[in-house]
Image 1: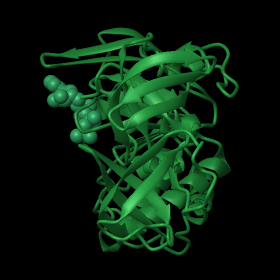
Image 2: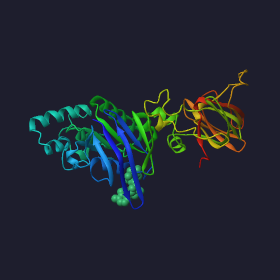
Image 3: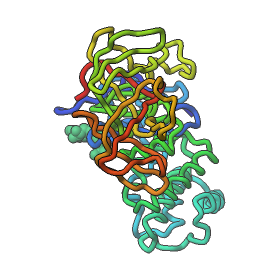
Image 4: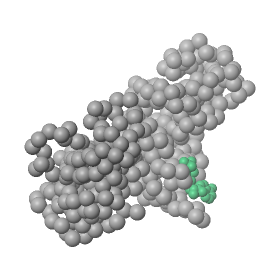
Length: 374
Ligand code: ATP
């Protein structure tokens, strides 16, 4: 089942939501964005709890925004589980089945399947109030999946759990979603969760989707500075675009000349998968214009003092001002003039505090955004 939102609008006195996107058959699409950007309102529109002011919602090409919530066949899992506290595990899962007129025998069989699926076999008659947070969320997932929904909506399902449980349950959710092939829209404000879980990630900002793409596309080729900085640690430096030489741009910055490979234009993308227009928007600046140079800490490397690296492009020299130990690697903060950069280096490649450092930025990994990044 695929879900399509076409020119959907919802306007509140201080907020406007404008949506136009698709959740493809069988995929897990992540809706990621900061607090207040409209994620929950989007789910409520899809579920039918609120009506759009304009636009169309369709499932497999059939309009659904005219249907009441219970006729849309959508399963929902909320952050706070929303289980019935006076019912046991089995009766919580059976609730939707009973509403849909499943026979007792069919329901019993289905509940057995679901308890196995969410690894809660033998929990049938346990009171849900006696379960741990992770177990309660498994019950909530089983309850949402029981009536065989055409679409699953998950609204920050892991945010009430501790970090370790979040990681193990997200792996479980991914396994179950793949096993069932159920089309899923998953809301989170957690970048790591989004990148780990999503087949694709839709990054939202102030009521609209700023970019949709695979985790690799949105992380490595962000369509805007907002997407790039929201998805992870980033370095930025202001510059002037001096010239374009074929695919390469030459940018003058306070730390020297930097070369960046320009993204392939929309429609000519090598790996665009038909959505290059949504993912390849950086590099739009004209010659001699102001640009923001953007690159991630892990796309920097040192030469380890080896000779012959003098001709390598994108060399930046500075001084180490901070080191952060992260087990297998280190984050190094470097001062270069009045600029600050963060480098993610393997152990053994990190100089001491106050030591001089020379590092290189991979030209293929630099993104350019027009204008001054604020
Ligand atoms: P969070 O991550 O904090 O849950 P969110 O991205 O889910 O945030 P929404 O809950 O969708 O954001 O809210 C988006 C905006 O819409 C907010 O500014 C909110 O105040 C506004 N809003 C939501 N519902 C209503 C309503 N019924 N009346 C007026 N404004 C509303």
